[in-house]
Length: 130
Image 1: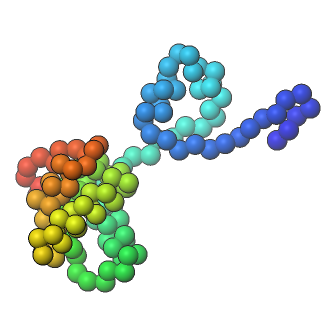
Image 2 (image 1 turned 180 degrees about the vertical axis):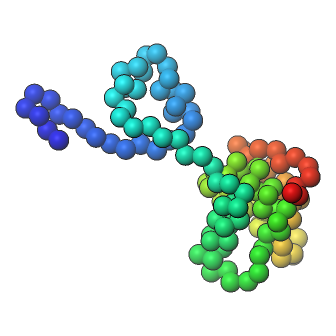
Image 3 (image 1 turned 90 degrees about the vertical axis):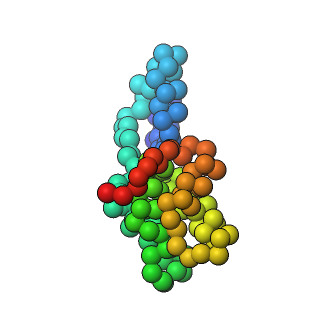
């Protein structure tokens, strides 16, 4: 949209909590006042994590039985906080750990190994059953 005396720019931005923290600084007040819409997406829930992982495996071409035990999926949820990007990283590293052992099913210990190797992942605690 253009006006005679000034130009106006509309954009969309997706960011993290760190951007929110920066926008809350007093010296950024004028920019913050120009933000018309603000929404925070929350992480995936426990059931959504299982569906998300199953979907990602199907898209990759996997048609077999579940590669992740129920406890491993709960551990993935805890370690990632439901954040899809972190879920992808942890699931990939867990699968690599399983492959390295010559096994075919991800267990909690594999997710723990992945978590220790991943910046930003949370502690999953113990136990990981309902």
